[in-house]
Structures are given as C-alpha cells and as structure tokens.
Length: 399
Image (cartoon, rainbow, N blue to C red; front, side, top):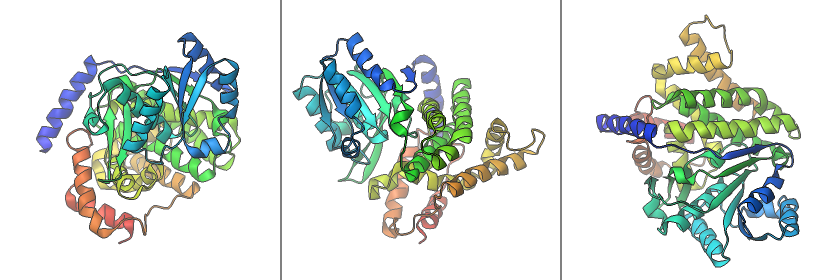
C-alpha cells in the first residue's frame, strides 16, 4: 500500500506540472470591500448571492457592503446558515438560493466555513452533481460561476485554494472536494474586517495558517514556488501573529496575518497537507470541533511523531526565521523550530490536549478515516503506524 501511495504521489507531481492552478486577482488594503462593486460592474453582475454565517449578519459587519450594493443597483440575496463545519445541506441550500434568485455571481464572506460553503455551492451549480460524488480530485471539471472571497479571519486561505472541505453529520465524515476550477477569481483582503476579532479566534486561525505552511513544507511534493510561499507565510506569522493576538486593532498585524493565510493557502493547495489535517478532520467530523484549533493542538504531536525524518526541513524553516545561528547543527535548528511552535501555543493560550472531547470507542474508526484520507494522496514525510496514531489520540484525549 505504501509503495502504491508513493507511485500515486509521483504521478500527481507529474500531473501538477501539466495542470495549471490559477491564482485569484488579489486586492489588499483598507476598505477594499469596495472592490466587490468594481468586480460586479466589470462582469455585468446584477444579482449576487452572498454566502456568510449568522454571526456576521448579527454583528452587522456586512452592512457597509450591503449599502454599497443597494446604491449601485446590485440585488443581493444572503445565505447565512453556514455551520462551523459546512455540511452537505449547507452547500445544497446555498446552491438552491443561487438558482432560485437567478444570481450571476457568488461572494463568500467570513471565515473558512462560509468561503468553503460558497465554493461548494459553485461546484454543485457547475457540475450538476451531488456532493458525495464530488469527493476527491478533479470531479467538478466545469467552470463554476464567478466567485469573490472576502476572509474575515486569517487562517484557512480558502480564498486562494482548490479545495472545499465539507462534513456529513450522518456519517461523521469530513472530506475535501478539490479541483483547480474552484480557485476563486477574486480574493479581497480587507484587514478592517478582522479588526477586533476575539483573541481566541485570532489564535486558532493564525495557528491554522501556520499549520498549512508547515505541512506544505514537510511533504514530498514541494516546488520552488510552494517553498517560497511557505517561507513568506511563516515569516509573516513570525512577525505578526502574537501582535495581532495582544493588539487586536493593530491594522498592520491584521493585514500581515491575512497575507500569511493567503500565501500559506497557495502553498498547501499545491503541496498538500498531512496527518495534522487528517486527524483534525476526524475531530471535526465526529465532534464538530473547530478546525483551526484542532490543527493547533495536534501539530506538536505530529512533529514529534515524525521524528528525525523531518529534521532537515525543520532546520530549513528555522533558518527562514533566523531562530539560531546559521552554523548551528541540524538537530539544534530542528529543536529551535519545534520550540518556536510551542512558544506560540503558550503565548496564544492554547492547550495541547483535548480532554473530554475524544471518546475511546471512536478511536479505531477515526484512525481508519485518517488512513483513508492520508493514503495515497498526501505526500507525508513518513507514514505513521496504527499504534502511533492510537497513542496520539489517547494522548490528545487524556484517556
């Protein structure tokens, strides 16, 4: 099985050289939400589906944009029922709203969940298929409606990725739909939309971005492009995450983290992720546990489980951030990088266990789900045994 997986990954690396993954038109800056009007008018959009969540609607964060849409005679229809882990039902309801109101474009605004819901609805509209049949790679194929994404958190990078992550509460599954056609045409990064975010959201989403950059680097499918994107993301996180956590109204820190999230997304959508995400998806599927926080908690455990196999890449990331002398031994650099991760968790007040969350009887099923997700697609540096995965779940759960 492992040999087969490596063959598949080698084949995918070859395919990646042929298939071009587009990048969104990127807008960055204060009050950039005005760009929604410019884009809509450029494409002749008169009817727009806005996909978000109830929290953003109740906080009235959308109101300035909605006023602009009305002033410019652009009709909008809001889908606001997106769950923390968007479900099949969410995607289908958003699609139905788009078709019912004869919309011409989709705007996803919020954290990763609304953006994934928006992209997932676009996949359904384009393909005419049901959600389960789109699971995996290259199942959408047809061009979706015009998509604009405006993140209000700095973590998922969904505004620049090929993926949609969807959950099925009935089966407790959480899986990805991946296709280059799902990269939004426009990504609008307006730091004002992230100002004043609760500190725990800043922490968990920031660690989500960090995890994306690290897992993309640790895998075996890196290119010069993905390494450069990961390096940029980690450098921005190093500079801005703790500041954004302690000073939530620091515009420079907020913008830096939005850019970090975006660049980490560009990296992992091409170089993939690994066991951190595999385990995090089981926690989301079984217990609806927030994805970014799950990644943050799991990350140090996986870095330890990989052992010496990742020391060269940990040392490389340490050099990116100048954590030690450039002449320090590889082991020292690797240790410094793991300590850098742990330091962030401590400063962000994130615990490293999930006591009371994981149920012992669920562990065998979750391990099977992790294996099915990781193998053969993710080019992880080394494969973890059932026994190692079992111990990680037990340790995480304090069982």
